[in-house]
Image (cartoon, rainbow, N blue to C red; front, side, top):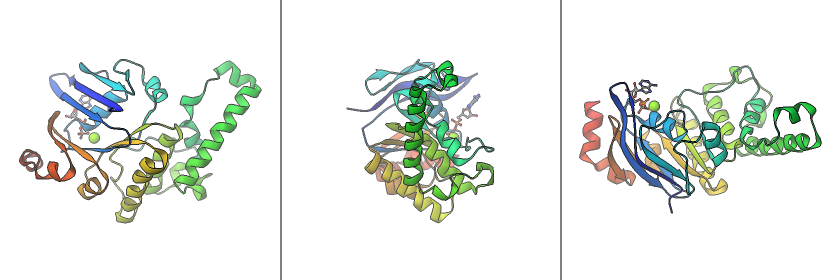
Length: 252
Ligand SMILES: Nc1ncnc2c1ncn2[C@@H]1O[C@H](COP(=O)(O)OP(=O)(O)O)[C@@H](O)[C@H]1O
Ligand SMILES: [Mg+2]
């Protein structure tokens, strides 16, 4: 049973069909890659799944529940977290504070209760802190815990953003170009984090990625897109050998 089913999803901006009739299913604990030239509609597809955009056609079912029209914060609550192509962190806050923000979905106490700082809120805060410390250990971010994000090298900020998504304890994580801007060594580390997320944290991963060696190393299946459409769906080898995929890259 697929954990995520995307059926005939489409969205237009003005006259442009940015995403056009995309359908696929992702199995639990699968690592699923989305490739395609710039402007193919990959990020837009993520924006539709995470409900930043409303799709004009189709439906999205996660974990047996139709999430096509639910608000974005409910998507996080349902168990889907993401990272962004351009890192999206609070630069003037510490690594710890940025990771704590990832705990938002778990907060059951309302604003009034938080202000009153009841024992319930206290317990909730302690649980958040414990979870965040687990993420810090998992991603080996301990030495950066109290450092402002603004002062960190790009590669570390990328890992912090991954950590913020993990702090939400998602079942499905969407990674938008996890290796972009990383050097060879950092990219190799990213491969390990992605595999560990699946193996140790039981997560399902969908990643948009340009680095074909990374895609081949970790993905079970690959969806290739171009001009909003599906070009091919299969194993990394199958998709790489697809003549339509090669043509799309040459054309782009
Ligand atoms: N909010 C928006 N308004 C108008 N056009 C958009 C918007 N978001 C994306 N697009 C257009 O949709 C197409 C797909 O973009 P995008 O999903 O970012 O591509 P990719 O991530 O595959 O490089 C591009 O032509 C882009 O300019
Ligand atoms: Mg993109």
